[in-house]
Image (cartoon, rainbow, N blue to C red):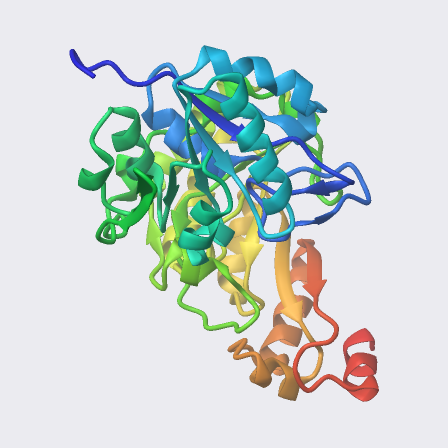
Length: 365
């Protein structure tokens, strides 16, 4: 490549199969029971870094393999997001794209291939590389046409041999990432994204990455986000929401999908005050330990709902999974939310290590 030209790049969340959706923006990949879709933010972010790229989110758009195959001849590089349940099917999609355009270069991203990069490459000769860890700038460098050996954070194949490049350091300056809302506006139909507890249409964004918690059931910190919460500045977050509101006047609610949005209380309050000045309705993930004073600031500035991972109503079970939560604190938090009029969507897991009929009954109670 010369003259600063980027490879024509396709970011693809592959078509669904047998009712499954890999979840390009979801922690939980499961059989489809209701029409519910998260935004493909993890693909939109590198797409925002690669000029002239295109993001295709096949499941919410109802696209089948026959619909996406013609895209193979229109692009030089395809980056597919995959997951554990969808991986065998996604490999077949990659092979079909390669058969359609033998010159197409294909790479995979997602938690599954980050854990098993060599197995992913061994699954098919159609797959040239797998990106590990935070892959935003990894993919941009591939799209710039750099030799794969010079790109950190890759496992790749050349002449039948699999190679591994050094790890890419985690991104410290989160403000270096461009906004994803322009990619949303260019490539997505936001009305196709629906989550039952959020107002429709909604818009989902990340304001930071990483989680210092040690929950044993969660794959996020070990694969993508890391153990430290690295954040965009409050000013940049508010600017992004202001732009999103201009681009999408129909949006009724903004959702911040950070695992740990409320870990940094002063920052959460600063963002809330900025959103309050914009007059938008918003929701976010939260731990069940946010103090009353912070909850009040958030509520007074447009907060409608908190998505809270309680997991269990039994302290021993919480301790078993290293949740780092005390039930008395969670109960106080819940009472505070009720008093302030903040809606809670609680999530729970049945069958955690040590679970019994009695502990399940305690959770339900």
